[in-house]
Length: 306
Image (cartoon, rainbow, N blue to C red):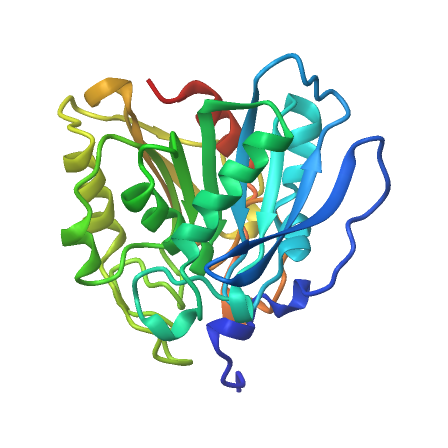
């Protein structure tokens, strides 16, 4: 029998985990004061960083119960940063949560204001390209990425939420300028269910989300996408992972925005090609059809702000 767990503890496996190996890149903690509260983050600057050239910034948000450095381990985004030369930053939520629009109890501070201030701070310390600021995250961090696209659309060029959706009621308030969106969702996610409903599934009630399909449709409307999508099925790289992946891509949207949905048949509450951080009985299958972090960066790189 599976023991009851909460989403607030699902990613705690990664709490305090050190990043494997050492590199010539800069890895350092940081903090700023936002709303009278000291807020923490972790920054990874690749060895190739050149202060004379504008550099892309990728904000990577942990899930409920996770930590900034643990999210680096889960996503493997530092390696992608080193290969492609962008700065990766892992903010830390209060009580390991983000106020994503489901319930005020998820955080004790104004997280949107924190991220806006964090971007301002990073722009004073590094040469950040203002047209290439992006956000991604898993679970609670995915919900929060959607919220940032709604509330900070003028600062965020594109988002890539993994295993997340939009809260019931909140989506009606999101009427923003176009932001490119790449969604990654598993059909067998028991915590943020593909068809919507109570977040936490059989484990705990943490608000309600609309379905993945409704979320996708909402962003198609916001971004003014009208042409028929490109639909492809990815090669089944690992038949033993019990997943297959279909991609719907709308590339002709308003202001050159794009909206994509990676539907992982049989996929769970997981980061594709990432670790099986909890048993399959709790989080489901990890897909190995594609490397989520590399694919997310390729999407970001192709969709700067206009």
